[in-house]
Amino acid sequence: MSWYYTPVPTVVPVEEFDASADANALRGAMKGFGTDEQAIIDILCARSNAQRQEIMERYSSELGRDLIDDLKSELGGKFEDVIVGLMMPPEKYLCKQLHKAMDGMGTDEDTLIEVLAPQTNEEVKKIVDCYEEMYSRPLAEHLCSETDGSFRRLLTMIIVGARDPQGTVDADLALEQAKQLYDAGEGKLGTDEEVFYKILAHASFDQLEIVFEEYKKLSGQTIEQAMKSELSGELYDALSAIVECVQMAPHFFAKRLHKAMDGAGTDDAKLIRIIVSRSEIDLQNVKDEFEQMYNKTLLSAVRNECSGDYKRALCALIGGA
Image (cartoon, rainbow, N blue to C red; front, top):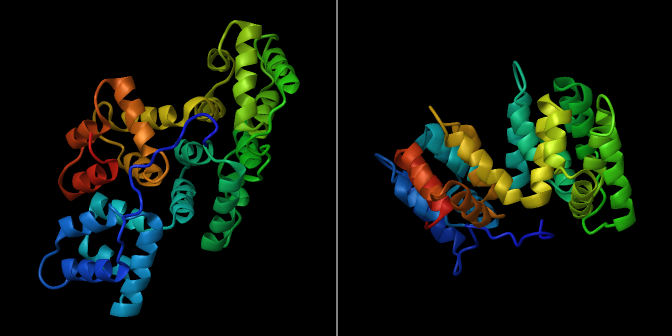
């Protein structure tokens, strides 16, 4: 996503890494009576995912044990969710989130949007391949059985990789696409939803940035303002998520983190998902955006909302204020 900002992670590979020493330290933290949760946080929240995978291999080869099984037997609740989430390769973690959003009664459309809207074609392909491997079922088929209408068609377009590659830009076409969007919405009675989801699912993020600028010149309104009056429901949510990710993905995630902690109760699943999945991508950018938007640090917000080892693990991933 480097076409409009430079992603800065909060979790980076540790230098002078020793997978064997970490594996043994983790075993020591879980062996015998009681568990040293802080030691687990200090190691696993300060290693890159690739390093965690190496620790897991060493744990198995040198100690003859499964690290995830040991962690699950020693930890519990939301703290366990964070740590076990960190141990999964990124695309597996996202696939698990998608599966959870569609499994059982009802569908969590909000999670589907959050996971799929920011992805490039390359990232989507990894998720699609991984999903089928994990669940012996194509992601497209599962999505189609859980969603319907224009929302289903939009998600299907995203996961079949219909989007043009990054860097694909055509200024003349952008002008034409802006006009098509205007004619499909503001410029007529009723709304032609198909035009909206086809353009927003097909054009590269770079191209969409120009389309949105042209739209504002043409209409006098931003694309967000136009969509708000023309669309509704899950399709509106998904398309506005794409618009936000085109303009500034950290803004999109900062807003969702705030929503997860705002008001009574906390949406812990969302909080964990965003912090774990963005920590090695752009969580520093999300933190900066959060502070600018809400006049408080993400760290202080999480400290106020969470407690115990769960809070300590999230704060370690977020890093200093």
